[in-house]
Image 1 (tube, rainbow, N blue to C red):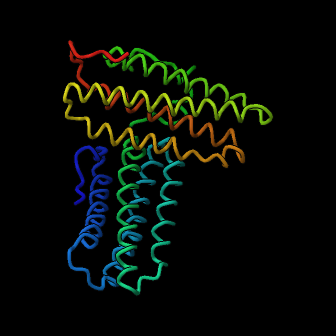
Image 2 (image 1 turned 90 degrees about the horizontal axis):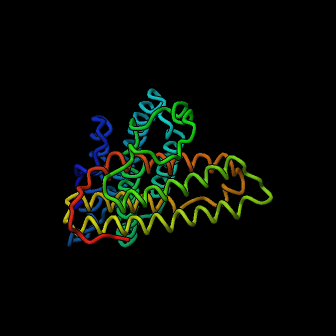
Image 3 (image 1 turned 45 degrees about the horizontal axis):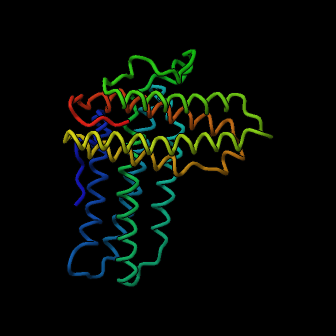
Amino acid sequence: MFTFTEDCKIGIEQIDDEHKYLFGLLDKAYILVTTDYHSDYYQQLKDIIAELDDYAEQHFSHEEAYMTQICDPELILQRSQHGFFREKIREFDFINIDREEDQQRVLSELVAFLARWLYRHILSSDILIGKLPPLEEWMIKENPCEFTEEYLTGIDFVDREHKELFRIVDNANQLVKSYDTSSSYDKIIDILNELKDYTKEHFGDEEEYMESIQYEGLPAQKRAHEAFIDKMENIDLDKIEEEPQEYLQHLIEFLLSWLINHILYTDKKIPLVKNTMAID
């Protein structure tokens, strides 16, 4: 069973309500696919897909209008993710489901896609809506990648690792600004791989600490971490070759924005418990 829980709320009532409704559609499909008695679900499956298509379109329209109103810097990325969702749902609508075994297969695929996409989209993208300064103000900072005191959590190893993440992002940002098509591609790939590897290491350390202190926010942290890693794992290398500076600059902005937001609104809630095993 899929339930819309507190850790999926972003704090904007209309958007949260619409996310809750989408979770309800996911749960409706899940109930069909897990019921013991399988009958002909042709019309029910068609209805779910149609409702998903219609309601997602309505929700995305509301979300994008709100982001436009507040000049949210993630709007372009959100539009791209919404477009991917629309295309995927419409692909399901064209699959032949005349046979009951095909209906079960498509239901299973639909549930897997919706669960993965909803959790990761909400926890890696929607959670940022309204929490970041407009892009113009953000980029006015002399060095937006500088690790400052406002990001300190008070947990020594977490702060050290966050500082290192900022350093890697800053290196990537500097390279993107001076991007040279003849020599920079391999360097940026190396830096992105370094960032991905170090991020996994950091998340592992952070989760180990939270587990050691039995922190109740650990499950939500894990979901957020998984969403970020998924973003890193799915960097479009073709886009880097086609339009390197534009794509990479937007990627850097996303990575930095996510990191800052995650530290300020999630990691700072992790309690400092003394006499626990230090993580080097």
